[in-house]
Amino acid sequence: MQPVTLHSAQARKIILHAAGLARRSSFGKGREAVYKVIQHLGFVQVDTNYTVERAHHHVIFSRVPGYRPEWLGELQADGRVFEFFTSDSGFIPMEDYRYSLPVKESLSGRKPLTPADIHIMNKVLDRVGREGPLMVKDFANDRVEASMGWWDWRPSKVALERLFMAGRLMVTRSRDFQRIYDLAGNLVPVGIDRTMPSPEEFARHVIRRTLRSLGIAHVREMAWRARFVKGHSIRTEVEKMVAGGEVCRVTVGGLSSAPLYMLPEYRKKKIELSGEAFVLSPWDPLNVFRHRLRDFFGFDYQIECFVPEARRKYGYFSLPVLVGDRFVARMDSKADRKEKVLVIHNLHFEPVKMEKDDIHKFAGAVRDFAAFNGCRGIEIKKTNNRGYARTIREELP
Image (tube, rainbow, N blue to C red; front, side, top):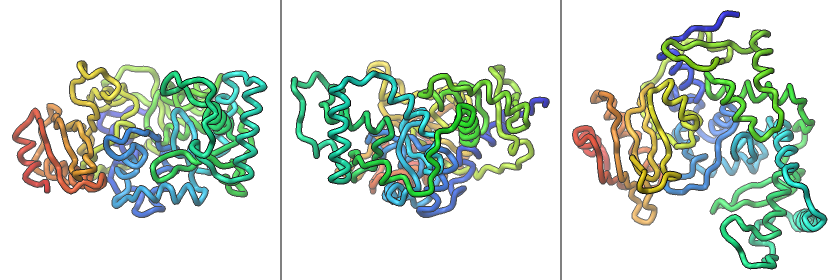
């Protein structure tokens, strides 16, 4: 089958549609829309950074108008989503439970267990079985030696995490985002398939899930989604799927790179973008692969909270702003929850021309984002474009 040839604008439309960002209400409204987002994307990455609202809530907020963070916990309590790893830790639709089993098998087999390890794991497992869901704080401090640092966990914490990685325990979250451990049998609903997929089944699942959420992807992005599973056969299976017509090869005008792939449904799909503005999380599925942003959007983005302060260019927690199919700005933001003010330390505009309507949409997205973070006021401290910033300020509370 001949590759599908696309021009860059077509590629961007496909990518944004797959990401659920062609329009903000693509999945509807309310709690059911939250489930549809997770089901479509395959997983929504968890992150603990609380500079603004945590990444998993932020990702859903970008796609579900009026999103309320408690809806995610309710879906987990109802057994419709669970938390575990794909390429990273995230919320996954429960229907995909069996595809977490190869990851658990791989993660749990990384380090041989000593008799002492097995003993404490059995003790922890027995206690959770007898007493019900427990948190780390429910276990006495069983450390023998002084802590050596952040990651020097005490034995009971290590045991809980090992049991979680192995799939014998699962987790929900408290209101303050602490893990609550429970037996897997208590959280996986009756009727959910718990059979181990074959390597081929697992690889094909990852390929479909990746292409469904990214729209267009290289093998390396698909392989990243399977990175915790040793010896996965992503590269082999994607070529088999091409030969069988389940996946298309793609070429994008002006882009010279490794082979690209997409699902056949996009060959003739008509996609219209709403032109809405989105303030996105650094861990939004659209943003996690920097090379894709450069290749398809001409946007060189890096979250700088991991960069030494002296080397930061845009700020500690700079959020990308998308309008239509263009990244127009990045805003280094922090929610001051005590004062209920969204502080934008640096509002940096990209070298693209924005019309008055674009700026109006931008201002609306910032207002909505502030409200989502529980903020009533917005303060812009620094900008590289006073004209755009002045117009935006005029529309802010």
